[in-house]
Length: 285
Image 1 (tube, helix red, strand yellow):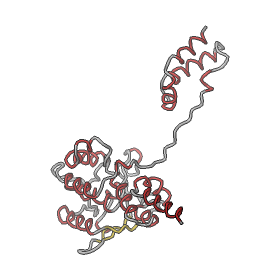
Image 2 (tube, one colour; image 1 turned 45 degrees about the vertical axis):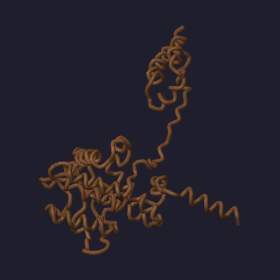
Image 3 (cartoon, rainbow, N blue to C red; image 1 turned 60 degrees about the vertical axis):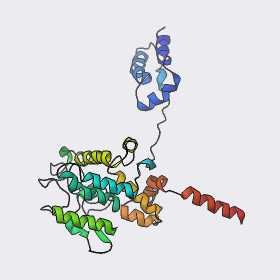
Image 4 (tube, helix red, strand yellow; image 1 turned 45 degrees about the horizontal axis):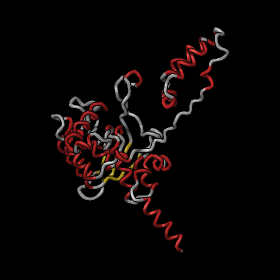
């Protein structure tokens, strides 16, 4: 009788919900497992019936949802909108967000950018030589006891640098930023009013506000450029769509080619049509 009552209580839930509940580790099965295991230990059940349930978790591929990718016109609208957010923080951050899009920098790389890392000629392309990042972490887990520790580049030895060519538009933005805001005591371009590193939550708040100014209501409700990091994905997607060879795009982004193609491949427009034309041409020959 005890076994029937237990199994009946589990089976009372709709079968369609079982895989989702099991995958999440919640629901009637998860709740019943300790109870059925206890009864099995008391020999009221011959075995725990839920031990026979096999969980198959969905593996994440890390692919980017193409809906997050903004186009150049939208990015420029967003950068203007950022300057209207806050009294000083928005104007300080506009160029930092520009680095994520026009240079494909990670947020921590942009936050650690120093004047000496920047070659900004009056005309033509410039160059950022990335050496340090300022990733955010819990103060308990940093060597300095601060929210940000200065570290080397991601996936690279501490002394290895990464050169990133930047277009004239970003060169002009950075030159203007330095003229307006100067640099910190340590040479960093982007900082708080007290010279500290701007936290991830602070620049995410500014970005969230800027989206409401620059995007239509339906776009604000969509995943479009939902996070500052999406600017980097948009940058890599733009490079690949422009025909930049994958190894060159990966070097600029600080990615492995395999990782870049796995993550950003869905954001390359027009590849299906090109492939169809090539297959059709081959079939006609």
